[in-house]
Image (cartoon, rainbow, N blue to C red; front, side, top):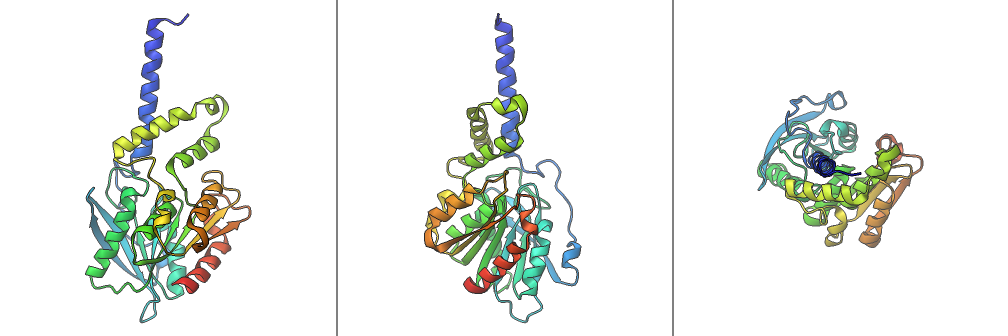
Length: 296
């Protein structure tokens, strides 16, 4: 028999668990302690790297930025590189080195709330896309001739890259590796991948309610966050790259985005690649350089 006390206890546990999950979705990795790494990693040794700090807003944050110049006198263009969630700019230093070797300027930034950047909350592209445009503004104001601009992103950063390409006319193309289409759908992917045993029977509505709470905490709209809501606004050609063994952000996300973008998008599926392994596949570098050579 369920007593009044046990019912109240159940409700309290439910609410506390919902709040905990909501805060885990809303809080940025450095909400409590910000990383202090400032030195470029070994992949960029020998490169001309300038350290920038750019203030963005209206939700104020200060972003840590590396501008990596190629050896060519005049760069072929500027490529902004955006890392995945709970990662930082160092994770894409190998790609930055490759792009510089091909004659492009690489701009590596720690997204708000990540790495050495400030910012307490995640907004799943809402504020992050505007931040990237403000970084481009700051570089131009600082005397850098950007030339044609491209954006390369992975996972969380891939979704942001598509939002930026849709909203900033300076961006001539975007390469998105393993992007999510919508926040609600990617939460379901995480449920499928990580819940085991009795936990897999937890109802989807509980996770979606926690996501609604996360939106209130971070001041973003879970129904509007994600590139499926912005991709049709842009005109830039888009390259989508996704592993067919990705269970964390499943292939259907890129397939949906390709359909929404129409003929200006191309989807490259990497056989056997998971979310964790896709960036190490040679196909990503090969397709990226070929795409930039054609569209930038």
